[in-house]
Image 1 (cartoon, helix red, strand yellow):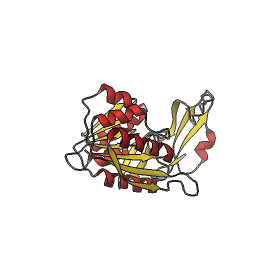
Image 2 (cartoon, helix red, strand yellow; image 1 turned 30 degrees about the vertical axis):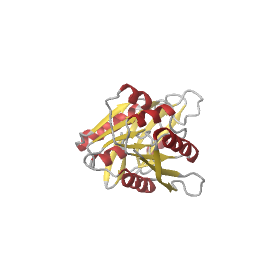
Image 3 (cartoon, helix red, strand yellow; image 1 turned 60 degrees about the vertical axis):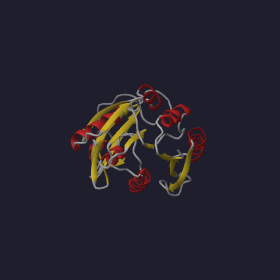
Image 4 (cartoon, helix red, strand yellow; image 1 turned 135 degrees about the vertical axis):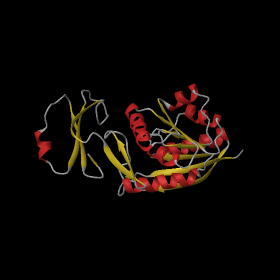
Length: 245
């Protein structure tokens, strides 16, 4: 369940395809419903199959007074207010200008890509999950954004196969396991001036910062924590690295 700008969006998880959910139609403030069919017992919360049931097809989220439409099962920060502050700090750290070319790694639905695109020459947005890339393309078209180049796939493979991708700024927001050494080396190969690393795991953040510092001759200029999940031990952190060369 997620809160939309106008109401609540629901994804119902089932172990088989069901055609009707009468109780849902009696609930108030429900603006859209999908069914997620999960037939296996993996540790994933939702299944790989999503069936539209009723209401609006897209979830609408608001950042910096702009509305973005995304598929409701896409990854989004759950604390919208703190997420906006986090994105604001990421923008401050990246120091964008009209000559900047930015890699947005693990870009998700591309919220940060679209926000930063207004201030830079070009953004390369790389994301593994196909429907998140579809969401980005849909919003780009509606908003008339032309300076984002989306790539779908594993970031290490995308960068290794497309050496023509050059950038002088990086924003990267990996899952808890952090970055592979291959990803770090592909980023270092381009010698970006500044790297902004958004992390949900302090342990892998420290490990990866050490790799950038030792392999790539970077220095860590600042680390800013964000309490995205109050009353828990979880913290998001943003670190900014600068090239010594």
